[in-house]
Amino acid sequence: MDTVLSGIRPTGNLHLGNYYGAVRSFVKMQYEYNCLFFIADWHSLTTHPTPENIQNSARTILAEYLACGLDPEKATIYVQSDVPETLELYLYFNMNTYLGELGRVTTFKEKARQQPDNVNAGLFTYPTLMAADILQHRAKYVPVGKDQEQNMEIARKCARRFNNIYKTELFPEPQNYYFGAEALKVPGLDGTGKMGKSDGNCIYLCDEEKVVRKKVMRAVTDNGPQALNSEKPEVIENLFKMMSIVSDAETVKYFDEKWNDCTLRYGDMKKQLAEDMVKVLNPIRERIQEFSANTELLDKIARQGAERARESASATLKEVRKIIGFRI
Ligand code: TYM
Image (cartoon, rainbow, N blue to C red; front, side, top):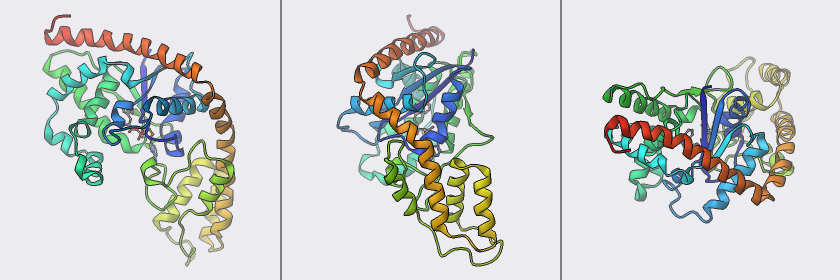
């Protein structure tokens, strides 16, 4: 059975971008594949070196994932820092990845701009740690949003290069997995291209109904359509994109026609959008509250998951050590 791996940094609550970009695919896949899901708490140190309570942040994400439908009976769920085997593989991949390749990664360049006083080596080698996360389980599919494409390219390079250098076929080249036909980038509500926790433009899965409505009503728009059948400016395109993600096709078509004949009122469209979001979010939020209250269950799931993940990682690592020539 093919293996699937998915991960998230515990630097905030899950938002709709995470949900539609990655979580929903994973929940669907857990019944058909050997699925592992992990919380990338080491990765979060690249931008948040002094987390307030990292174990609690991991629990929060875990509760949110379970609320979305992740099934601990089906999927292995673990916390990255509970699996030290990952680090040895990370070291080997660092030996075969070149500075030029890592320096070209857009997320690295962006973060380096955002935190000029902390352009650390962990940030630079973020993609090789991600490659180790994936390849230690020899995962074939990784459900991700569009923002992870470059990191995934490096993961494939790590697999390919290791296989070439050591004349082996140990690692499969992991493929990006998308829920629909192509990579998804859920837009933010501030007119910017991407919903992201550091941008303050998010709808969180745990947001109360009235918060969701308020955020949506405040979403950035313009003066409205000025000519029949005109092209939509980016902010409006984003609003429609959001609607096409959470609402049904009929609803999108209705507002699209209104845009085309210049009778669209953004207020009406936003009200509908908020309504459809609330429908998706209400049951999830209720389950988040239930799971969050049960820290004993969350810790048990993470402990069991770590055991299984370590087993899978050490089997790969044993092969790797043998192939390179180290004592096993
Ligand atoms: P992170 O924590 O930024 O996001 C987790 C997942 O959510 C997706 N995502 C989005 N998808 C569509 N539209 C958006 N606006 C949006 N925002 C976030 C991301 O694509 C991601 O799939 N590097 C990873 C964590 C990681 C990982 C891994 C993932 C570490 N090792 C190994 C997979 C495999 C990250 O920062 O995701």
